[in-house]
Image (cartoon, rainbow, N blue to C red; front, side, top):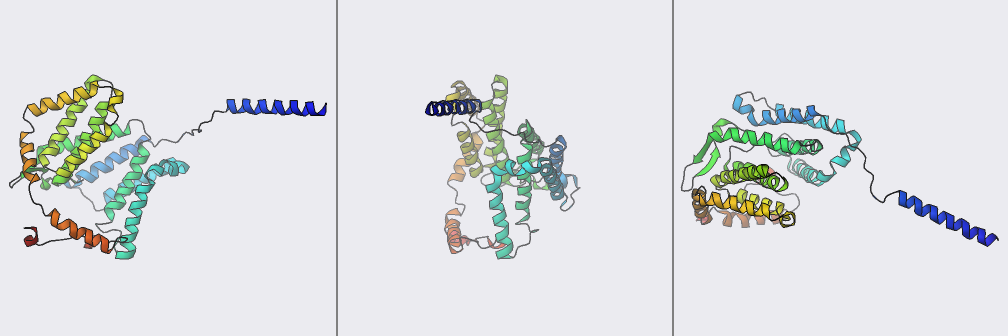
Amino acid sequence: SRITQLISLRFVQTIMNLTAQHQRPNRPAYVPVPIPSLKAEIGFYVAMLYSLTADVWGISVPLLAAVMMFAVAALCMWELRSFAVSVYAPVRLLLGCAITYILIQIVFHAESIMSDTIRPFVIWMVQLIIVGSLCLRPGFFRRYVVFLFSIALLALPHLAFSPGDVERAAIDRELGLGGGFGGINGLGQWFGFFAIYFAIYGLETTRFAYRLGAWGLTVGSLFIVALTVSRGSLLAAALGIAIGFRGVLKRGFAPVVLLILLVAGVYASGVFDRAYTDYEQRATEETGRAVIWPMVIGRIMDSPLIGVGAFDVGTYATSARIA
């Protein structure tokens, strides 16, 4: 009958639809993305090396480092082509914040894009684009950290201690090394980053020798941070390592025991005794922050949207008020 034929046809269509759904897995399709070339990675290393060491060798040319960075970024974007939007999607919020800051400074505070308060943000955005692109290259991040760590090690022989009640380590400013190495807190930030990287690398690797070596470098990096007596850098490094190790118990208890024994052995050796004393002394030191911060918060509340301008951001208190 006609009704039986319709029911049979409907049944066959249903079976065909179910078969098609079964053959087509319910998962996203992956499209191959072009990987930036080796020359882009080498160009980035050359630009970084020039930016950090040009003053050391006496070959610094104004804006040359920026031009080199822009050239490498342009090469990365050209090689990615239509995939650039997808690749840079994870950092779009960071780029948006930096662009907003630059527009506010230019439009509302009449800053020049070449000023010392805006140019570092522009270079930072360019470097963010480069690193975001080169991370597509297998092993790039490991090579990049080794590159930076090598420069940091070459700078350590120029370590000097500032005079005062609390001696704090920093790279001699006369060396001319860029990237914040000349500042006490800058040195702490560099080696705090290395401590986080090597700690997590030691956790992720499955080779015992690599793990022991990575965590040895972690302890050494933390030792340099301790010599700077930079409380912010030490706290940031500790938080970064803690976040990286948040799931360590799911991976196994042995790595935790090994790290505890390593840290305990170094602590028992007395290497950190001086740093511990310096941090203890700085903990009770009045730096003026308790006076400055209420004033800073007041200025923020007076102009919460566009601020007061980068050149007018300095907030000062008299020595009498600090005392």
